[in-house]
Length: 216
View 1 (cartoon, one colour):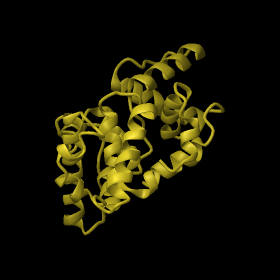
View 2 (view 1 turned 90 degrees about the vertical axis):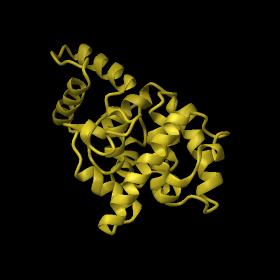
View 3 (view 1 turned 120 degrees about the horizontal axis):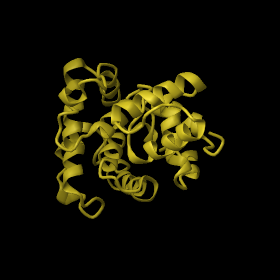
View 4 (view 1 turned 30 degrees about the horizontal axis):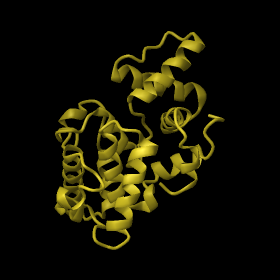
């Protein structure tokens, strides 16, 4: 944890659904782009920033309903992967409709969805059933929606495996749910939030520490 400066503040902003200057559009894009598995700090973050400059700051796309309507040919030079772009549009559409039905704005809609979602049976959830949304993307969206949970991606698994092995603990990290449960236990033992443990693993495996001093 000492190797991840700014972690607590960043994770608090994440759980308050205020990442990316509070733009729910950018949070959804972040999750969708991350689903491809490319380097987060070197690839995903710069692309989301480019989208912010061209579409959010100019007022072209500021709501999830506007994101749903944005076609891939308009953003191809920023993000080439069509599948993850469809994920962004479909997730945006689902959350936008939740907001319309409940009388909520986009941020409130994401938080409402997250509060009423569960990792158990995740693939049956409307967002979990979107083609291209795996358990990692699903959990990431729940985190940004205010749920203190964790996500079982490759970097998280690698770092947590090292911690468990070094500590001599009889804990498994091989299956997705086993890893999720192990991080839940580590959170109980250490007092760190699950979201903090998750972000710590990314930071110690990358050069992203400085980025956390900016509002992403």
